[in-house]
Image 1 (tube, one colour):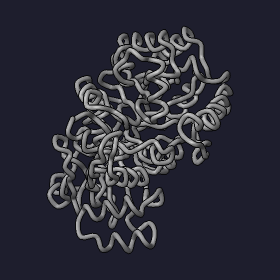
Image 2 (image 1 turned 180 degrees about the vertical axis):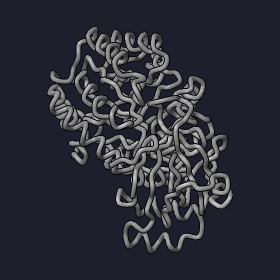
Image 3 (image 1 turned 45 degrees about the horizontal axis):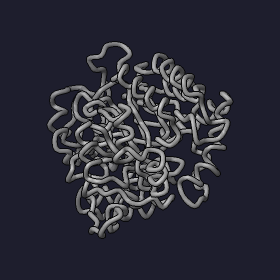
Amino acid sequence: MKAYRAAILSFDPDTGAPRHESDGLLMTGPGAGGPGAPCVVLALGPFHELIHRYPGLDVESLPDHLIAPGFVDLHLHYPQLDVIGSPADGLLPWLEQHTFPQEARFADPQHAASVAEFFLDELDRHGVTTALTFCTSHPQSVDALMSAAQPRGLKLIAGKCLQDRHCPDGVRDATEQSLLDTEALIARWHGLGRLGYAITPRFAPSCSDAQLQGAGELAARHPGVWIQSHVAENLDELAWVRELYPRDRSYLEVYSRFGLLRERSVYAHCLHLDEDDRALLRERGAAAAVCPTSNFFLGSGCFDFASAWRTGFLHGLASDVGGGTSLSPFRTMLAAYEAGRAAFTGGGPAKAGVSLAPSRLWWLHTAGAARALGLEGVVGNLAPGCEADFVLLDPRATPLLARRTAQARDLEELLFALIVLGDERAVARTVRAGSLVD
């Protein structure tokens, strides 16, 4: 059992409202899962109330620091670290000119293993303790990432990219073999330690009907696995989908028709949806991964937060590296704030933007993202029983950050100063399942 004294941020499990202990006590230790199970939060509350229940408890005191839930990244591409910041005219040219050539390199297991270790180191450095990520179309890319993540104790969900058409040699896979490989990878990795598998069609244009049909059949046979893909990111992409699937009402309906829209399915972007699409997401329990730095970088548009709230479908924040420009949750939260404030057109009359509260942004990258994954009460929060993933944040990590946070009048100002001025230097420590990340 370990105990920490610091300011602590958590969220009400029912409402998502922030809870702030200015002088709190966090206790972690073995849960009910038996030997080998992740450590969990045992208790959280005001220090002076809890400490009397545990006489003689050895407490690590962390003054002037903030303990917060580890960040949950709902969508990113581990093979794309080396294409961050690659210029292009838009999504489709960016894929052709930068992404596909880089992903072809993952046919080499040694290259895949090297990138996997670097990728996981970067997640640790940025305080990301749960991630849902694409691999490439090569099964060895999945094996490399899972093999590296398993001994670290990271909560990682990943999958082999499915793409059997409209992509170049080197990344295009064979339909039947791609499905056989996916099922073998599910058997090998899903549920091993803190690992999970995601069935991963890249996007509808890259998959034949036979491949999408097979993916849907796999999802039906394995209801505990996740599904991840992209939808409604870019106007050129939307036009392409309309040409390929003229009988489907919408891009999202393509996935629905093939049995790929259900709980534990996460669709990146969801920018250009109509009300029927939003209602379909809500009814099926599917989630949107909101990727603001990627959407700004590729000129794709802004997510309509107001319509998402009104409709009530699940959504959370994601870096979308390498279309996204940073693994930093602070950068992602700031971009989400800016996207929310922007006037939203969505192809119709402009609507006024919304101002996302700092604590709401933080929730969307922690407990809210965990809810979108179907992992509410497991990760993303510090309520008793949650797995003990957290970050120790230093509000004095840089001179300007220290000057601004010293003047914060309340929790919202403190969190917003961290969002606007913080980066990985503010992450003093990352703790995963109760264990300090070296």
